[in-house]
Image (cartoon, rainbow, N blue to C red):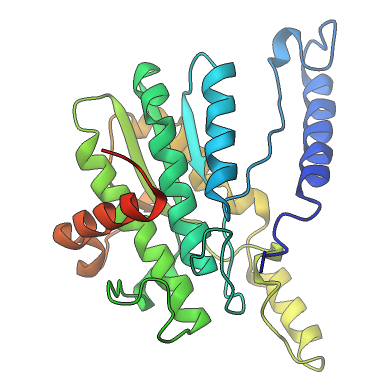
Length: 269
């Protein structure tokens, strides 16, 4: 079964790109075309992280067309969905949130290194605290709890970041991980809220949840701020470094997860 996460995404991306072009034209020199002049170039590309085939095709296209890669932000994800599998047979949340990004990042590492100084930003969640890496059942075939599996995938994001930072020492490529906070997006579309509770939930979300712009601030900070130049392997929230639980700093688990992930996505050493 394939998820509904990619339906309409290209159209929404093109709408967002058009809006960004309009905003940029209002603020700067429009140049001879919408993407030219001072605006640079804004390109929309599609990748399905629930498909290793799609990830490989996307990366091949990037490597063929782009001479450099200064920043990679791994932001996509799926949250507490019913049990389903990716195209390659992985539990959906682990497959999309961890394995898809793991393969994508590894395939683009060469370009990131040749473009150094460059940065990788990984979006995790505070909910990593409720997850554990069960190497005996990474695919959740013995048991499935949608909340636990989301937390496991977010813990995997952090372990991946820390192991990658270790492997990138001396390359001038940095990688950091963050939690964005609770943001008003459709990420929680798989959560069932009773009809009578929805008005209260909507009120609470507007009062206390971050807007998408607010939720993006730490990603933007890690991608562009000179304050974190040379900083790598750290965990951030609200543009500040935060402490991690010991299980997110377990180096042996991080190495084992990396090795197993390589096998799962088919990376040849």
